[in-house]
Image 1: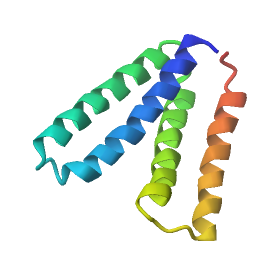
Image 2 (image 1 turned 45 degrees about the vertical axis):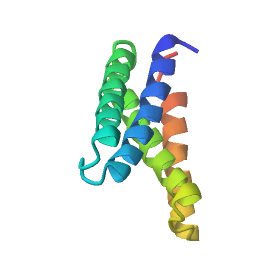
Image 3 (image 1 turned 90 degrees about the vertical axis):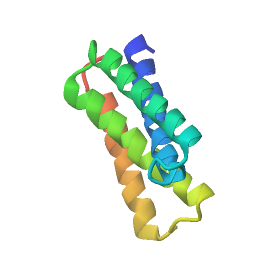
Image 4 (image 1 turned 120 degrees about the vertical axis):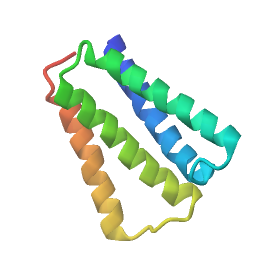
Length: 109
């Protein structure tokens, strides 16, 4: 796997991390969690920028947001007891299918 793809996956994982950080920072009122959240946000953007040096914009951004959206929703289901409705699961599967499709058909190795 090329380095750009590794950067992109790590950027997506960081996006999941900062989304959870936003929840637990309680509107940036908890200093420690807020600082960590901002650091992870910056790291996510830096990794995305590195990936975009080699990957097409639409592919990189779409995959980054897809990893973040699907990953955050899945972890919300698992750890925060969020809705497990069938239609929600189907929508998550569609996001994941879109991310995989962008990777497979991106034309970038």
